[in-house]
Image 1: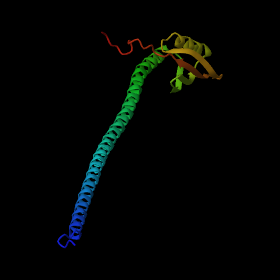
Image 2: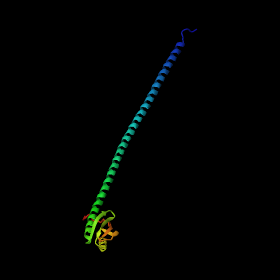
Image 3: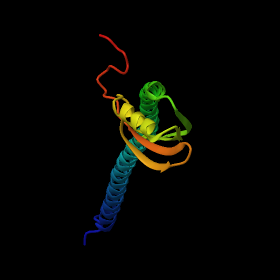
Image 4: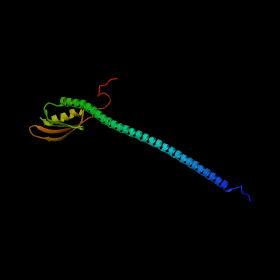
Amino acid sequence: MNQGVNLLPWREERRQRQRRRAATTSAVLVLIAVGILSGVWWSQDRDLKYQQSRNQYLLNAIAQVEAQLKEIDDIEERKEALLTRMAIIRQLQSERVTLVRGMTELATTIPEGIFFSSLQRSPEGVSLTGMAQSSSRISALMEQLTNTPSFDQPELNVINVGDTQEFELWVSSVRPETDGSATGGQQ
């Protein structure tokens, strides 16, 4: 019998080495897996933060553009209000010339013996109320008003006969032609 050879401890040592190698390999594999997972998590977290920063940049840019659009809308509203005021001023300027011309023509065309008690002006024309010494003088007034550049189509609405003739006369205004002559501008 062979007494010098004992194979059991050798096998036991080999099993321990294999267990250590398996444990080391397992530990290394776990460390590699943890490292890979950490790398993937870190990369995704970095990408997520980058995307969030891009989204925030876009939100800030959108807020700036919306503020600029609101400012543009306010400017356009002020522009429209200013253009409306300018149009009103132009209209008033042209009406002022027309009104002065019309009143001058009215004063120069009144025949002797006619007196006005009231005058009411509207954009469409002038309503005259007054007294005349005779109806022929009212007819002469209507004819002379027809021949003026500022008035057209006189209409006699009411006439009361007595010692003096009371009348109400409507005369439509003629719109001035906008050929530049009203402004007096020469080039």
